Length: 132
Image (tube, rainbow, N blue to C red; front, top):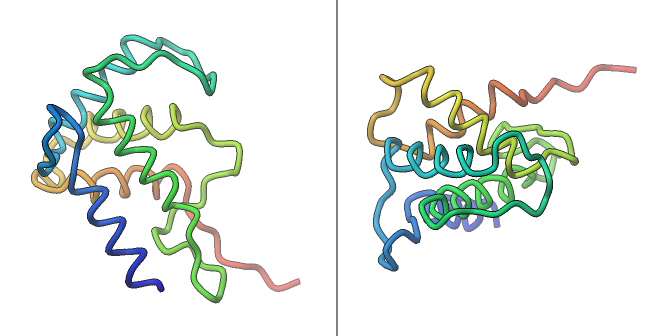
């Protein structure tokens, strides 16, 4: 089960919907797409924001990351290491990725998924369980 979920994640993070053809998404391409959303939406945090066509690749990509970030193993550990609060919006994921990617231009030049996860893990680290 865990291996199949990770395979789905890798596939989702490796593809974009831009131009109707499936192809690998570079960190730069994903950042440009996310920036298009940020420029269009401003500071909106609503769950219903208008997404420009140039932002669709980012929107779908980060939605897949958000969906998979809640997957836990049999011990309750988040498989991706992202422990975002339940009320975290997709716009927050988009902004976190964009801020992290702009601040770390030399990281993971060929892997948008790894770059996105590093930014999200930094923003939403999982805390070890404390003994009561």
